[in-house]
Length: 361
Ligand code: IPM
Ligand code: MG
Image (cartoon, rainbow, N blue to C red; front, side, top):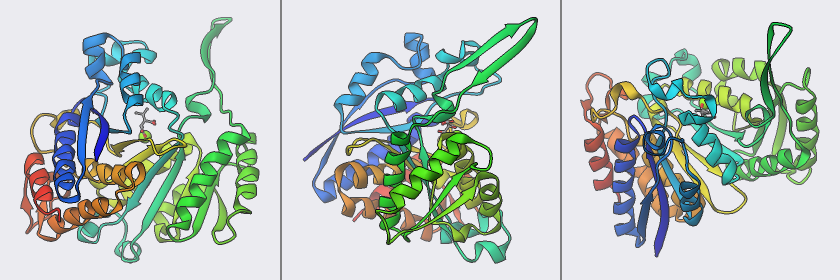
């Protein structure tokens, strides 16, 4: 069986980490009897340098023709890179927003879990981290403030900027359904996060989530205000299973949750549409300061590739094999610099990819 995969190596450490994920996927293919076929496209700064825009229409068409997209990371140093002298709609991030919208990737899954082997890196007090946690942040990805009308004007010499936060009930319903479906396969709890004490969009969010919940009597629903959620994530992260929230809140809370795990280099993500199609990428950024040095941690990208096998190709066994290989390498004490602790063996990006690929059974 062939798997048609479009790859976006992107910027910074992107190309190095995607190369490791491909290596691991190829090995999983040998063991589990599938053949990944990759087509690379440019996005972000890499595309700006060649085409003058962060994502071309041809690149979108190539992505659409595949069954899934595997991405590294995009963007550069916002204070130094010439990409950030360009107008906002031509900067690297605009490519990411464009592909999300063009492929209708409305459901963003960001797991934040505490790895036993890496518990020492968790910045929380031990009495809190000892309980462990495994959270799935479900972030709405194609609506809200990110895609509402915006403008900057000058009225009577006063500059004024406006962004709009709009959701219709269908946009809320489809992400809520995904959230409940996923909770059903986990610990059957959804925490819907909003700001319903202030925002109309949040009051509609809450109402629609309540309606959807009626079809999932086996899943417990609770509502939480976003400011409280930010607090609860550091106070008692073990209380969460699925966190369901809109685009901007999800952007902020997912960074917080990943930091709380202490190992952002380990966290995968998936952005899905209504079919099996998805874009898979690590939760971390492009780390331009360490690009090309072969020291980046490829594990988040490798685990994203595992998510791809699970969600886009129904190859659950191969996905588990990759996840087990990662666990095994950690158990044996191999670490990249970002997750290194005393007594472990420090390895580079390529070596980490090799070690994981070798352990796939
Ligand atoms: C993320 C990133 C993006 C976002 C940026 C790069 C536009 O922060 O994927 O979380 O805000 O969605
Ligand atoms: Mg973000």
